[in-house]
Amino acid sequence: MNNFGLIDLQVNGHGGVDFNQLPLSPEDVQKVCRSLRNEGTVGFLPTLVTNDPNLTATLAKIISNTAERYNPETEAEILGLHLEGPFISPQPGARGAHNERWITKPDIDWVRRMQDITGGKIRILTMSPEWDNSTRFIAAVCQLGIKVAVGHTLAAAEQIIEAVDAGATLSTHLGNGLPAMLARHPNPVWSQLAQDRLWASVIGDGFHLPKEVFDVIYRVKKEKMFLVSDSTSFTGMKPGRYNAPIGGDVVLTTEGKLYLAQNETLLAGAAMSLRQTVDTLIARKWLTAEEALTLTSVRPRQYLENINL
Ligand SMILES: [Zn+2]
Image 1 (cartoon, rainbow, N blue to C red):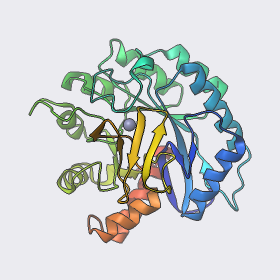
Image 2 (image 1 turned 180 degrees about the horizontal axis):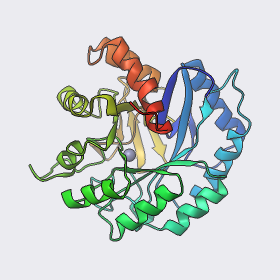
Image 3 (image 1 turned 30 degrees about the vertical axis):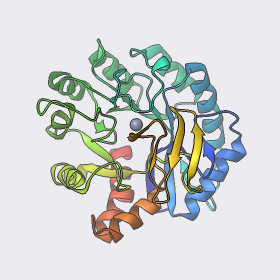
Image 4 (image 1 turned 90 degrees about the vertical axis):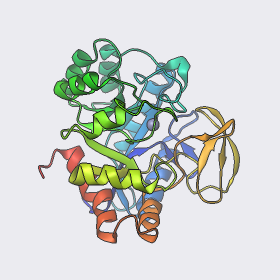
């Protein structure tokens, strides 16, 4: 990374370009790189959600090939890929807007194939440790140089601890990817908050978490928290009803909230870029300007590059 700026470790799309849907051309990917750079983002991880594994492989190859064409003058750098799924919880609520049809138990051979196809560009894999044999799988993924994140999970407390012992280092968008109703305790939020070795990424658009939850995660995780946009292709588009590859029809409101048309309580990713997130959090006084910039530049970079605090 040559430039100092925002680092977004979860980007599903931007400005009408969807990384999770064909057709996807190198020019489409480069358009996102330029748009993000214009907003101050210097590096990001295109994120592929649960999908037909053959489609995921095709999309990953297109994106990783485009990464080789990086122009540091005009583009945000593709720092690798984030695979969110398909080894997440199949449970309603926990799986969020991910397509149940393609959710499956951990398969290290598939991860190895993905790493081969992309020339080693898979950087983060988000999975749920509620599957059998998760610890062995997590250790094997770490061996490949891929960071393992816990997310979209209903794992038990012991399974979270075992995942961390096996090498998991991150909670993906902590506080989201969960059913609306949870047991008071134990539940996966407490279990992950209590693990000091886990970093936490948080969607800071003001819709995914109420302020008090955001504040508590920040107070507990401190310098081990960073913000992600989780932005979909609808980021920067006009309000309205659209068809999305995950979950079907979605609605984008004027305030920037994106939800499944069938159920307003189910968010379908976010529609705010990381730059907009920074502006929003400062304007709402959820964070100071210094904190907002640190959580969107220094912290994600420290996490991704293993820079000691
Ligand atoms: Zn998610």
